[in-house]
Image 1: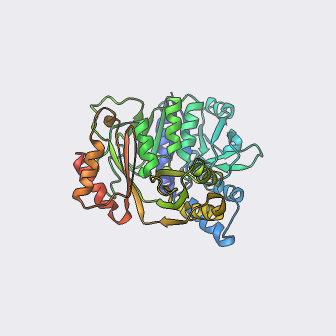
Image 2 (image 1 turned 90 degrees about the vertical axis):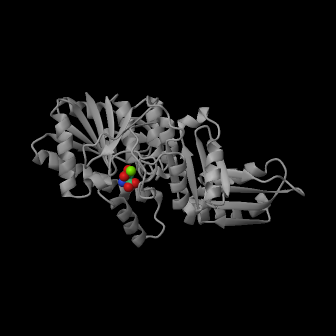
Image 3 (image 1 turned 90 degrees about the horizontal axis):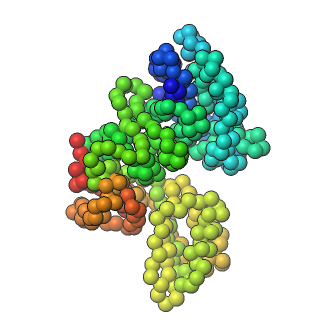
Length: 402
Ligand code: ASP
Ligand code: MG
């Protein structure tokens, strides 16, 4: 059997934890299995590298940032191979170049295109544990790239798909996927199983356990994932296509505090307005999420949308720089907002989920600023100060509490 195991930063934060991971991997290896280990950088090292870079140059280029980032994962894989060797087990560390993990060319947010598997296969055949750097890749210029924050999960799933692994385990500092973030909702409980689609929505909406692209990729290639803790032997949560348990109406509540809202007021009410606005944002690589357009009156309309926390100001600047072309009266930004969502495959066949959520917010006297829905999700934008109260009340009303 071939097993891919991925360990996050907290799982390899210090010497003791590195040895803990080494022992867990060796246990698997000693069952006669082939073991490929994917690691993140130790602890908060990636954040520290950002701080370090900014202390040298407040505006470092993305290429040089990636060059710097890759040292984080390179440190942890080398140390892991040393720990395994000290425990008497043959292991080898490989970085993105040595494996050859090919990505698109964009620095900081590249996508994996193709992984060469010969080197890994060769090392596995000589009965070594193979330890691969997460998060990084190489592009057509032979430069390092990174896959976006949290990207090591995606490296693991991509490797599992490329190697046709029998198992892909994502080890983290929580023991699985919960009905809500346990730091926000005390009564949240661990889910035994969840579908790819639900997980994708939860991951995208700030559940934080998995990189959303890793879930996308797992679904595409049918890689069944297990999310579990590196510090306990708890079973964890299985992420797969179909779940066998009777579906609850909703599976989880997610809170995303990184949202910001932008309103462009007084746009022309004619064809091409929305195109010009979102085209300008897309060209600046800004991801837009919820979009709301008002009814046009007196030849004028407003468009409101949300963007991820870090790029509200950037979006504002793009709109202001294009003022003549976009032709609007004024633009506003609101930063103290957050997204609260309920996600559940069960709502596809059960009407009334949105109504129940809105009623719950009404009972809590919480005002809804925007709404968006998909087949398996209802999202509202509310004041960030009301996030915890809303999440707890919604979690309760859908009977998710322990
Ligand atoms: N070290 C990277 C980060 O902190 C990648 C990862 O941990 O998945 O974002
Ligand atoms: Mg992570």
